[in-house]
Length: 430
Image (tube, rainbow, N blue to C red; front, side, top):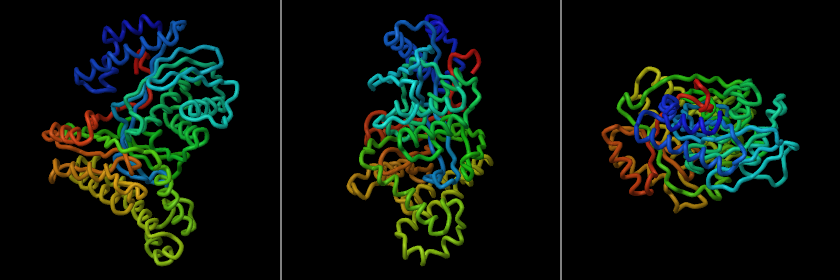
């Protein structure tokens, strides 16, 4: 689509229905998004003045609702795409390179002549090369594109900015160079491949899957090659609650060992039980074996394995409660999940930085506001970062005000569930 036409369509609210679907119906929010897209296109034209035709893409962040640290053990999760996203203005060409400028970061170029893992290549360049390599291996002939990207899925916010970016790149390549043959589930796998192999981060599949598929989803990762994905609808606001995520601004620096330890300790227990992952271990057999496990495994590893078994079942129970419209049971389970993460999984703060306890502080302050209502828990990987709360609508303003007072302006975000994953905005029908 011609740049002038795109600008005119945005200005004349031609994408209004799409924006409402992605971001909600608040006039203030819709005006913000309209200006955001106009600014993004204008920035693109400044960066790449020779390009005349563009397309615009969007991919959402995600929130983990149930299943804290279960996916990497082939467990079950309950999660949702949210109305914070990464957007990209893209012009396709035949230059044999992908040029990228993301807001707040230096521009870089990925040469498509060599899609092998590059020693020393880091960050988004490595991710893009990995995604392009996977699509190329599937038969897609990628000629190149120029891209300007801006995101309100802030890095380190716990909403998974990396998965949103991976979904964004996968959606761009699949739609233009692969005739949409891969689809949402395969795009998620490709994103995980790039993160694991090219970026070097040993991550599970939940973040990419939720960002790519969109909506509220229950996912069973027992067979990671063919995960069982069950989308369903639930309107929290219609039931009197708002989903809030608070970024406690705790630093993720030097926490890699903490994240790795959870997975390695869980897999260490599984190995002692003769299995590669805890999902394949009998829960009864695990508890029977604890005396022998203590001879070779730490008590913390045993506690973390115990968390997996209860949390894996709880993620399914939470989904069932929402499907049945039983919000009180769901909230009880969320609070139970939070207690399990605190006491068994032990991922509310790092033992290497014992005085930095932003997450326990945020949970304590949340409970003061919520009193006996709603629910609150650690969100995502833990140790630093975000908490999640389900807040009664009548307390939402008081809650966000208090969280922002403690953790800074805009630390607390009111979330809506986004019904779709990675999409092209400039298509006639989304």
